[in-house]
Length: 178
Image (cartoon, rainbow, N blue to C red; front, side, top):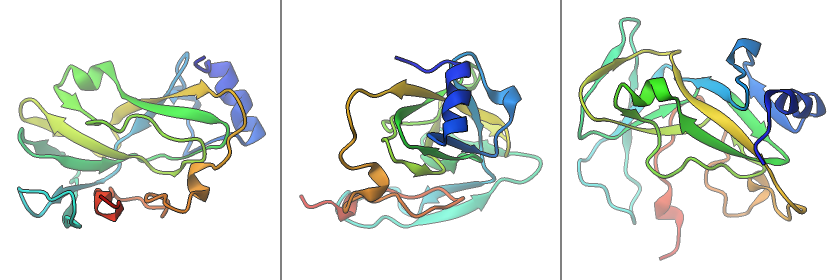
């Protein structure tokens, strides 16, 4: 079951959903619009290694925007910090973003109950496109869960993305044992 706008507000009042900053105008019928932060990152190497810590470099998006190019993975970050204590958040691209040829996540659209952070975006484009800090980039949809949560994400011993940040975070796949 997807939460409606009214239900999202009720859950915010209970403290089960946190969105900071929050703007009522960004609340849709059953989603909340999130915005692109002012920092992107790209990997230093064109060849990434799943068993190694791949280093990134940060890029500040200038006021006049930044042109993204195809065949490059950009890591972005949402302006909004969120906490989800009793629901499963899904991050989806906005249709207006998709119609510009911008994909905002390769595979990681689902959050976990207990996720408390900004969202790192895995941005790719089909053709060159100029983007701007603060532009609407995606929407959060909240799903109800059934049953008690045994271990919220932020309490897991092996959770890799719990350090609160306003910058994109590179893959931590290298921390897995395989």
